[in-house]
Structure formats: C-alpha cells, structure tokens
Image 1 (cartoon, rainbow, N blue to C red):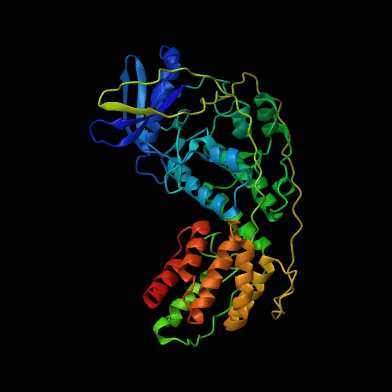
Image 2: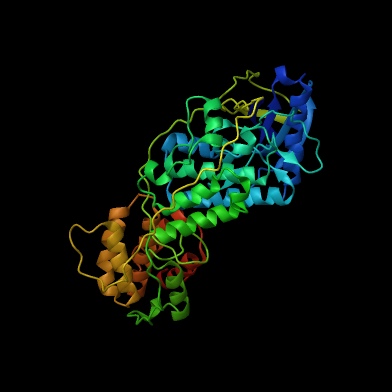
Length: 472
C-alpha cells in the first residue's frame, strides 16, 4: 500500500520510520480506512511488549502517513532469506517475544490477521517487535472487510481465513505455528508455486513433518506443530505462549530422560576464587548441561539439540510494485534517507470458499526411550561433541571436575561457531568446571558465548559476577 522511509524527527532529533500511503491508493476510501486502522490498532498496544511503537499519524497532500520507531535489524523474513534454517535456541527466543506481543494484543481485543516473518522486525539488539497491524480487527473499531474477502498472506493463512470466515486470535496462533515451522525448517509447511494453491493447501493439505524437512529436528517437534497447525481452531493451543512452551518441552524430551541431582560441595584450591556453594549449586542445577533449562525455558530441565544445517530458501510471495518519490516532506519531520524495502505483499483475496473437508488426523510420533544414565566412560576418539558434553556433565555431577575438564574442552572446540543449544550448554559447563577448579582462563568468554545463544539468564549472570570478583 505504500513505502517506508527512514527520516529524522525535526523536533526530537531522533531517527524514525515513516510509512506513507501510495498516491494511487489515496482516493480509495477502503484502503485509506485500512491504513488509519493500522495506526489505531497499534496505538492501543503502545505499552505492550515487543510491539512497534507508533509516534504520530497524519496526512500530507492527501496522503496519510504513520510515524513509528525505526528498527535497524531488518525482519525475520530477511534472516530466513539470507541464512535459511535458524538455531532452535534463537527460534525459541524470537517466538517467545512474538508470542508476548500477540497475547497482549489478543487480551486487548485485537487480532493481527497477518502474522508472518516480514512483519516481525528486529531491533539493534536482535529482539523481535511485531509490526503492521494494517489489516487487524479490533473490538470497538468498524470492520472494513467485505463479506467473502480474504485478507492476509497466503503462506500464513489459517484455514478459516482461507475460506472467508472471521479471523480470531486462534488464526494468529496458527500463523505463529507457520512461522515456527519456517524458522526451524527453512520452508513454509504448505509452500506452493501459486498463492491460490497455497491458501487451499492450508484448508485441504495434510500437515507435513518438520523433522522430515529438517532431519536435525527431533520427531517430538512434529506433534507440537501438528497441534499448532490444526485445521479446527478449537484444537490449537490456547495462547501463543503455550506454543513456545510446548516446543521447548519437545526439544527437552528429545534430548533424553536424565535429571539433575544435587551438586556436591566443591573443594576450591584457590581461596581468592571461592564461589559460595549455594550459588554454585543453584547455577549448576539450572544450567549444568544437556538436561538443563538454558535456552529452552526458564523453569524445567532442558536437553541438548543440535543446530540444523543452514539452507537458503527464497519464499514465494505475491508482491505489488509501488512507486513513490525519493523523498517526502512531512510536518515536523525532515527526510533523512529512503529505506529500500520490498514492496508490501498483496493480500490474498478469494470470493468463493473451498469445499469443507474433514479434519486431518496426524500420526502420533513414536515415543523415544532413554536408558538410565551410566557411569562416564573414557573418551573415544570418535566421540561427538554432544556426547563429550554429556559425559563431561556426568563427571561434573559426580564432582570429578579434573576428568570433566578435557571432555568439555574438546566438546566446546568441536561445537565452536555452530550457534546450537549444545554449544551454549557446553560453554557454560566448561566455564563452571574451570572456575570450580580455581581457574580463570576463558571463563568470562565462555559465559559470553553461552549467553549469545540462549539469552540472558540469572545463572550465567551469577557465575559471571562471582568470576569477575575473583578473577578480576
């Protein structure tokens, strides 16, 4: 419907983004109302988490505009196009942030109706902000959708949207499951050559297996995504946060059944590096290894999962080319420079609903079983970095830090740069072990590496604080 400009606020001297309605749409009353509707819906969520902030709305030379915060990190669509499959830890962080924004919108009576990677923007810290409420429906705002018209993007349409029914919060949750599928596999679940075929596949198609598309994913993830992509809204998750929690639990379950026991007291060889035993035990219980809730959540035990192999996928989109002048001058705003953006995708529109179909029944993944943990064995030359981390952690639990150290060092070396959850666990384990042995070499750097994958956690912060005190 328009183009986005990067501009400088002439009053507050801050960089902002200005969305301007295209000139040839300015006389279309329906589109003008939709454009204004976006600002009103987003303004209701100005204090909501992970939502793009609207600063101002207005009109210049008959063309409406919206002034909003400028986010320099691009979108998740950009990341998928450039990098393909994303590491599970990063995916869970992005989904958790998106879920917080959407659940807040739903609590305020607002349904986004166009959740997709292109509308999930990244700030300079890599955190997601949900944008573009241009076709949102909100309690108390007049509807502008004609009967039988489908608004949204074909690749992310919930089945009820594809047949022209009213979108609800369950429709947004379906779209979030599509986004999760795409981030984890590099492809949309019902990707087709044409938008019409893809929209129909959401209604009729059997839900594909994410673990078949990306063999690095455990089969447990399929069950979660199958529920998220259920044809009937009532069969889906109750909230967006529930989707994220279920994915985290699935990744945990796939890593094994080992549970963390109490960490024995540690005898430190250097008094100046002494870490309070309570803090050390708490940190180990929370982040000790493959079974710890480091990147997959905040409360339960977690388990390792390897990072998928990146692949580059260019998702097919329906686009409309919009030509606007290179600069535009708005009251109180001076143009700084134009942002080059992809043209906004044209909403998929249909007039006739496809015939109804019976609910698809998805096969239940076979449960995985794990043998009880055994005593750690000597390292074999062919041992994988993941198994080295597993063995090292078992030795940590037993208080045998001297034997755990070389295993964890090999694990970290083998996982270096993978961006996987296993690398995050192994890096923390090695930092923990070195500090427990009275060593300071590389401890802070290892904690930084772990935090870069899984985000800020109190256990990492605690160990970093103690290491900073003792190691300088």
